[in-house]
Length: 224
Image (cartoon, rainbow, N blue to C red; front, side, top):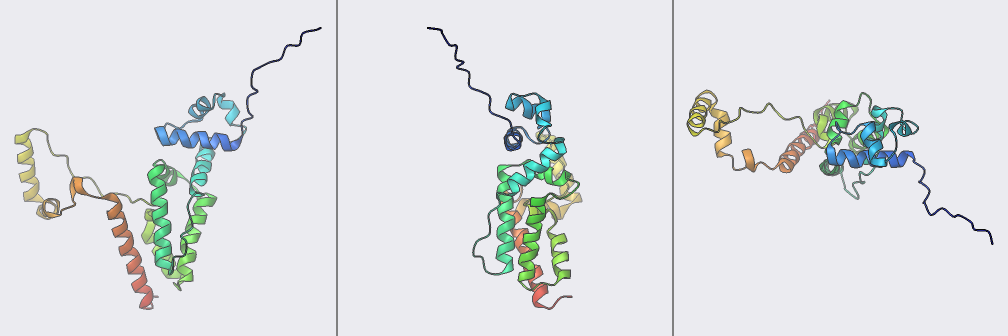
């Protein structure tokens, strides 16, 4: 009887676009967006970088696809009644998504054009406002006021100077800062949740609610 050699090696699965995007997201989650290059994604997939270019044209297109893939996971706000709860729920859902994928912020801020899913998110926010009876002018100004908050983050104010480690230098620096900027020190020392005790999520929700309440008040007053 003639022997037959049978290979036991499993054939390598065919690489597709979805695998490339998933690998890029996983790498960005672990290492950040800046460290997510075509070469690093290729290494993660055990292929050559050239294999990726069959599925995405360049790194910029890859980031667009990563962002759209994650934004597609945004849930619908459910049976929220009224435009304010709907807008609030959508934005807080985006913030929750940002918490799981921190690289999203850099991706959003560096895009030269809005991606389809990004446009979809913006369109849904505006649609909720229009359904609530807001005028086109008020929707326009509300979106500008929300700015980056519609994506779940804000651009922070300028950081204050770092306190020196040396006790003597620290005491002198605090005294000088208090003399020059008494209102800042009053807030920093008397507010129970200032400094290390600041809850970023609570502060974000506070600012978001202020904006939405203000827009609602303008709408109720017939703002034009």
